[in-house]
Image (cartoon, rainbow over all chains, first blue to last red; front, side, top):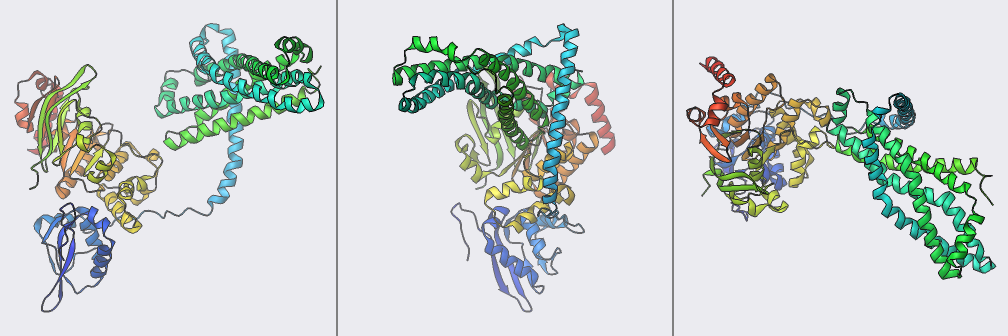
Length: 378
Length: 260
């Protein structure tokens, strides 16, 4: 019955010997946690044997006995040493520890059913708390702005310029690429429709209005929300984890002044510029596509564009950009401050920040379209 | 057949880029011993420990743990098969997404133990060994104090019954009472379970009370590896600075008086 595993380790096993009055259970081989985990049959057999009180036990012939295996035996014996036990002296301490001592039982793992009730409550309460915390942040920013008007020297120019670079300059490539592709596909798809009505020349109105008024700002905002918004949330979150936020407070440096304000200012400066950039690239893409698909020359396109799209549309786009930039930065910072010092929370709040800022951007955009419904059409 | 030494470092040279960290280090640690590794900050103590775990690889030389060359067995698979070493990182390194129970049970689950009853039994046993109550089992690591984090991390390090325990500054960040508790706990566990301990520490109490061997790392070399009493009689300037300043002398005197 002696089993040898591939690694040359003596597997644990149970041998029985018949004595005069009682059965003798002899354990041999290596009794370690690792081998115990592997053989569930052995565990079951031990538990069953342990319940039978009339057995004699001999564990003096085991090669190795670790504390886990010892505890398993102890538990199988009903939390006591059996009356007739042969044991080596060196193994005695492994059992002594458990005499007169209770082993803690963890609380039950099943979730409470009341959690469902709290779940809904938490959602409603959470929404209210988000709004109030966000408004507090806005209020702080306004106060900071007022303070900076009287103390212009305290303006964190360095941080602002850093954020302009991170959120603006390094986003030029991706916004250009996306703008270009959207311009080309818009132009190409609508040219097919317009050709059917013989209204090819209206491609300029269509592209100009839709890109300058809606698509350019939205595209740039969504890309920036995903790109810079998430980075801002994670940045503030990591500062919480490494206690940098606490260190700033201890030095008497205001979070809103040093962390939030530069981001908000930088994004509200950068967003309009990025929108102009996206608009221009998307229009170039549309123009090239219109030339190829509809034979509308570049000159014609450029001449016709200001006539069909009043310049006020550009201003609407720029104002939208500023508002979007502020919204994205503030939502990102708001969620950044909510991050708790653990790994799960970091991912969760970053996701929330991106989702919330994109949703907010679309909501604000809808408000803009309703408010300016009579403005800017030729 | 069994190897006599648990940890063997043979001619270890380590460079970080151009910077020399270890210069020809040799060390053999026998079974059941408790080694305290001391040295100035930045002398490469933690690097040495990482080399023993297999997280860093020395530029030259061989690290043997339990008779097996670590560098050759650095893949995840090998580490899993081996993991007879328990590691206690300086800040606990508990998984913050899991609670205390799950943290301790994690190595068992990874070993392939599917019997929840056995896992529960073993986790409860280890919890009791390190002196934690059942109330703590369901808490998340963020709610624990520094001392409790160390205890939980110790329980996690011990769950697979390691033959070698690596401790990185086990008492740093603990108050004197908690650190004293931790020393007593380690002492008791060592008596019962008889593992080998490789410990990085600055704590003179631990060196005096717990360690059977003391290794001193200075000038990129191992300048001493002996029992504390013998190390104290060495004439190296770092040892003089470290062990024979006012504070150290006072602590040793107090300990001497305490133990008679």
